[in-house]
Image: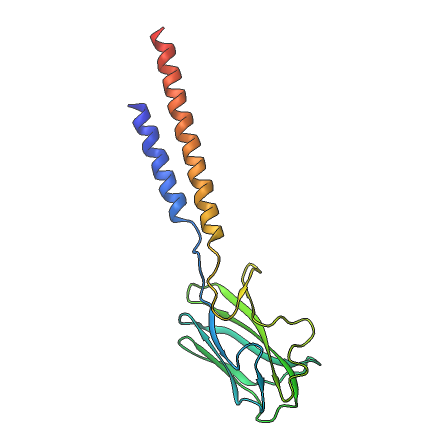
Length: 186
């Protein structure tokens, strides 16, 4: 009877651990205009970022800077469902520009990243220190900003550790129960 109680408690604990496991994916940038690494003949009117799901309106930041770290955005970013836009001047000097963005995904986690584009000859397509197509989530991890799925490693790791712990506890309980029962027979 006691073994059934122990097994029931352990299964309840396992259910809680599995249900508390972190989500495997956050919303991600699926498309940008201009696209990462693009070389444009003339300046675009705005920067458009399209995400995999609706973005929270609060806290969206989009900055467009040149190699001298001069800002080229006009106004605040506008969020409509999964689309974030920010205006930029009609005339941008030839050169490279870096777009730095940060939004709050639909699951409440901040997601951010950078990409670069160039206007004119494209000689300065990427500003120093920028990585074309790099995206960071709130934990600082990197993934491809143009639509790569988040790696499922954290979820798999939690599942392996949880499963191993449950197996050890159950195995230990069975061993302890049998050993105790065997000693009681003698």
